[in-house]
Image 1 (tube, helix red, strand yellow):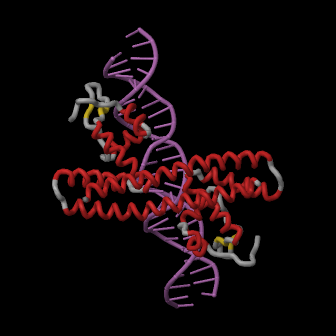
Image 2 (spheres, each protein chain N blue to C red; image 1 turned 135 degrees about the vertical axis):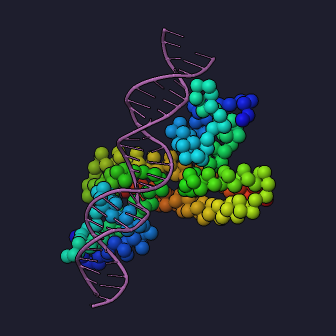
Image 3 (cartoon, rainbow over the protein chains, first blue to last red; image 1 turned 135 degrees about the horizontal axis):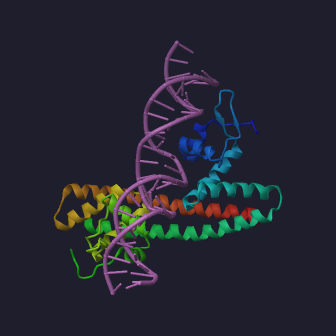
Length: 124
Length: 124
DNA sequence: TTGCTCCTCACGTCACGTGAGGTGGC
DNA sequence: TTGCTCCTCACGTCACGTGAGGTGGC
């Protein structure tokens, strides 16, 4: 692993605005194991790890499962190495789903506005 | 209850785009009991019930708990009857939280766009 | 009588939250 | 040596999903 500059879990949590528990859970399910461990067993994350975490963080609000996100990380990694048709197909499907779910998020903002309006009416 | 025109759970689910299980669960926890039951035990919802369901549906994407939404329904009902200072205060707090969380949703849309961009880069 | 719709348990799932009890490292 | 940060269980939580087995009503 890249030992040039590693971070403990606390710093990663602060930088990514994620809980320690989430980061540990993501390791438990194989989504995002840290690149290394210290002598005493502390998780050590590299900048590359943080990049992956931030990718997952952006994907999360779309409601994909941890398993789906794990697959995306794998496919992105595979495509960085060589052209993998299967990975390409899966990623294209994820991109399409992203568009569908993005639209859903936008509708949720609209619903939030409607809710806000209704509450304001009651308070008026 | 208003028997003028009642609906069974299936029709309500279809109209509100909610699952039967959600509607049943919302009754279980006291959030939204239907106004009545048929002889045979079928849940009977009124138009007023559906109104309440739609209010909850708009509020849901903001991530409030079922308990918080139950309180909101109670407070809205209370204010419809008479002026209740405590209900007013709680609703104002919900309105403020709504603004905070709406902003969070908007940021999530932005994150979705960033994610979409990153995936597109890998596919290019 | 036949379907389709509904009913009540009740266990399962997903993504963590929340202590409890213990140790690492500047 | 003192704190602060980290560790591993392991049970709890929230909002349902998902059958299983049975009944209602046009």
